[in-house]
Image 1 (cartoon, rainbow, N blue to C red):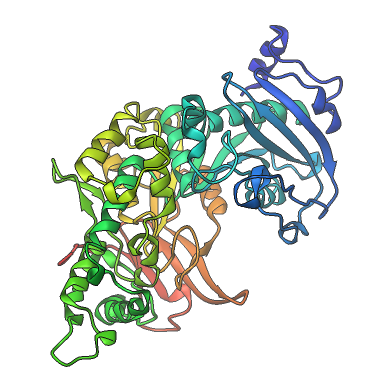
Image 2 (cartoon, rainbow, N blue to C red):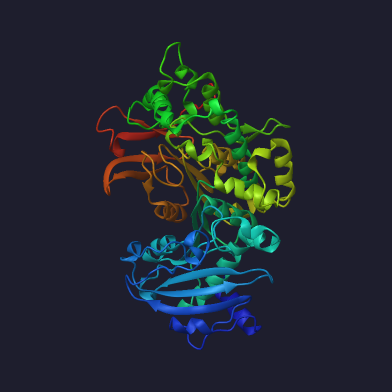
Length: 521
């Protein structure tokens, strides 16, 4: 928000400036539309301890208490507020403002995960330590479940998109009041739900952010919920079809044997699963073979179902992509005996509106129709790929996704990115939108791949130069020590070893185009 608009709001009586914007404490007297400032106070360097309030899972508004990650956080002004854009809204936000001498002049809003319900303090700490004025919200409810949505459509709208937009507008007003100037650049940074939140902002409020980092974005969210439940049931059609977790390493090793060396390096990571032609049928039990060391025909079909994903029963279009070769060690997430909790929460409280609903009564065609009926305006799904208004303003969208993601299938991002370019023009690739797939990374982080990289540094460089990085340096750490580096390439390019030098050093790899195929999957 510009300084001119801010002053206009004050002049119209819609915004009351504090007696002095020079101190943190003075922000407590600011009057913003639909906002109640609940506290404003300086926090000494390393002194922040996250609050713990009663709530589901013992967490509540502030999440789990753990002071250790905040020891290195410099002093900052902490503002807490409650936003009420509707009579049923109760959106808690926290705005963390670096001391003026430490402010980089920029704004960073941070995202949530799952069904939200907590303030994400680690994200705030990372942002404010880097010099950004930062903000986060619980999206208007307590605890990581969807139970809040039952009988509260306004709260569901808050969680879907309104809370993040309201948070952003109010936080920018506080930034302007505190520093006496608006941020020169505004960034979004989130993964999973946070990735979807970022893309939702670009779709609905293209002026809120100059650049967005969206990791493992759960776009097509309602389709994902229904499709992931169908995938789970397809993998567990009968008791003898279920794959015991003890067999996951066997399947994983077979997938690596088939595809790990395709990039010229055998390192326990499949660089490009989209080109992998692994068929789990090679593990079918032979006569007299110990069943612990092989898969029954029913289990082979279950493995194929996990790789294949789920299609719309009416159109045949992919509803939810399958998991990639290399993800097998985490199949319990979507392929275990019980469906993913986030999925059943959506079915109970949003789709069926029945807390006693039993996933065993699931019907793909009917549930898909119901899911789409409750989300006619795409509020929850954020499936639209029309980002023209965001791009026309010069907005930049950096997407990233781990190829071993066991929760939000990685091809969900590939498909979204491809559709954006198909609709908006391939000339936008690397200029307004870029996708970086992370080999060997799980959901947002973790796994044997190089999952540590500077997302904000990459988007900052992009904004400064006008072009997305051709590659992003990434590292893998063991016990806090870097033991491998690799380049993350702009999709569809992949990292290829040059043939000489250590395979654990990024400098010995280059980003090259590679034809991809789903093979037998």
